[in-house]
Every structure is written in structure tokens, then in C-alpha cells.
Length: 197
Image (cartoon, rainbow, N blue to C red; front, side, top):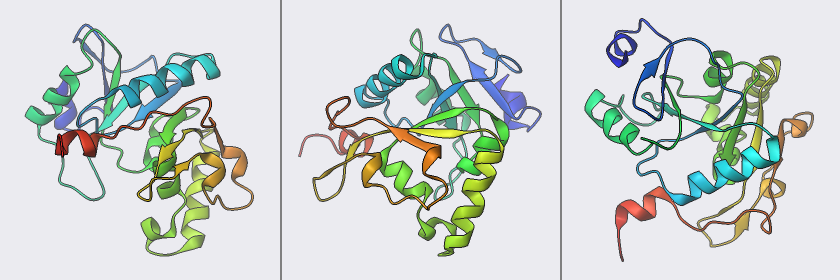
């Protein structure tokens, strides 16, 4: 099934916890996108808290495309998917941006960290054009999608939740989230890849 996906005969593939692949329904109601290199307890705990708050199961989404990096090779994709075996379903796509994820998965709630939420609304990721940020958010809203945000510690060591993200007026209702008392896990994939300091 992943071969068909790489040949672009399918827009997305759902990898089940038992390792089987499916195309087509069910479409996800709630997705936690990421690169999962590696998957860690911050991801899984945020998924659990979001599922409880939103009243729907959370699946994961792994895109083989990234705006900053080359496409994931099949071998690397399979390595990352193996982390979810017997745990969670994963939707594999080539949607590199939330605009494209919203078009692919209309009506979906995307579960993200505050760092990702800040990138979603940063003009830096839209050629420096604030109007393009609003166009992207408008498209996401038209597809019936929204964001559920878990707090993260920033580079300065401060805990930032959704309230600390500067969201353009008129689009704040697309973002809801958790405060520090509800969710805080100070771990990142980057730190885990670096290993002990």
C-alpha cells in the first residue's frame, strides 16, 4: 500500500496499529502531526490529554514531505512508523503545510505544540507576508479545521501556551489549548536525538 502512495496513486495511507495499511475511510477527526524522529512521551501524553478534552480518539499524521527537508525515503518512513506498532494509527501523507493538511483532512482538529502554533501564524513561513498568513488561516477555516495547542518550553526556557502565541485578529477562535497545569512535558525530539549532554 505504501508503494502505491509513493507512486502518488493515493493521497494518504492509514497505518493501523497491527501494521496493516488502508486507503479511504475512516477519515480522522483529530490528528497530531509530526516527524516523530523519535516518537516520545510528550507526543503520546498530548494525544491522550487532547482525546480526553475533545472526546474523540487522536491519530497521528506523518508527512513524507517537509518544507525544509528532502522527502522521506521509504526505509526511513517505515522506521518511524514502526514506533507506533501496537499503539496508535498513523496517517501517512505528503502534506507539508497545514493548508495542505486541511485540504486533505477537512473538518479535522490538528493537535500541535505551541512552537508549531507559532510557526503556523508567523509571516516568516509565508515569505514575510502577513496577508499570506491570513489567507492560509482563512483556507484552513473554510475546510472546517482548527487547532488544539499544548504548551511547550521555548528556546529561552519559558513555558509558552496558546495564550503566548500572537494569532491574527479574526482567527483566534481557530486555536484553543491547554494551560501549564493541564499539560507540561519538557522533552523534545531534537534533545532526544542529541542524547545525553
